Amino acid sequence: MNFHPTDVVVIGAGQAGLSAAYHLQRRGLDYAVLDAEEGPGGAWRHRWKSLRMATVNGISDLPGIAKPEVDPAEPSSEFLTRYFGSYEAELGLAVHRPVKVRAVRREDSNPAGRLRIETPEDGWSAKALINATGTWTRPFWPIYPGQNTFRGQQAHVADYVSADQFRGKHVVVVGGGISAVGLLEEISRVTSTSLVHAPGTGLAG
Image (cartoon, rainbow, N blue to C red; front, side, top):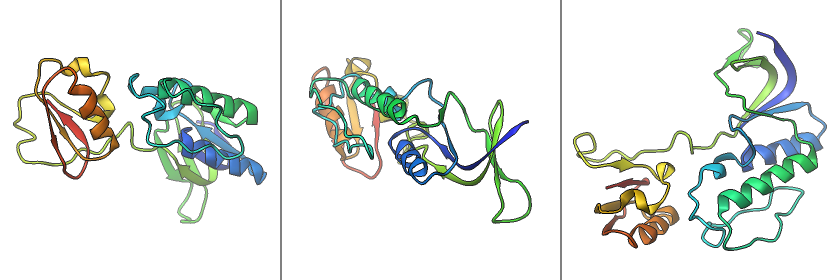
């Protein structure tokens, strides 16, 4: 495998990854952003269509370029994908995609030595690594009694598409954050619901 030398590798091109790239570029460091997605937007590419900008729990501007005027009715997945894409293009950020990182290893036994970032194609050799992958592709599932024996459908908020997927079922929403409350309100329009305020997030129906 051919390893491209660089100063820093950033894994992930969501809000954290793009912010890191901005500051690395400003400081004149050589860097590469490796993003597994097919296009810009990070995890926002996968948010459900009914999540509008009016109901998003606050979105900070990316450094250096303020987000454009927001239409509250626009799906957040569309607005933020467009914003992130224009940000990458305007700043000329070194984003490579789709690139999935398979492993990160030390090049030798020196604990302060360079890192090898392995991908299915070429890899990168870097002095430092920034992990900006977030949790969307590996969501946290709380552990609760009966989880393995419950015969109904269990889904995490990351699996949510629309309320129609739960039509005709009684849905218990577990959690008390903004995602739980928002989905409870939306799902309750098409079926009966209950809310269990407990650590973690998830859906069970």
